[in-house]
Image (cartoon, rainbow, N blue to C red; front, top):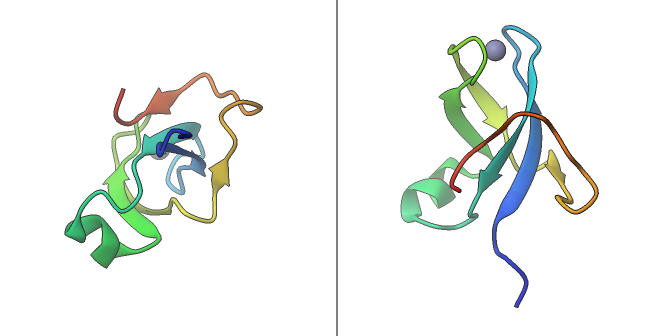
Length: 72
Ligand SMILES: [Zn+2]
């Protein structure tokens, strides 16, 4: 079984910082209700933004970013 953890490469709309976000899709009803977007805090400027975490998914085997947040 492949890992269910997804990695998305996101860019903060406020400061322009790029980072990877790791998450488990469909982990809860709350996550499903929010759909493709997730409201969270930029790890660089600490400002809240709505990020599309679904259409920005990348393959973690070929994509590497210096900054990664999410469940370890
Ligand atoms: Zn930011």
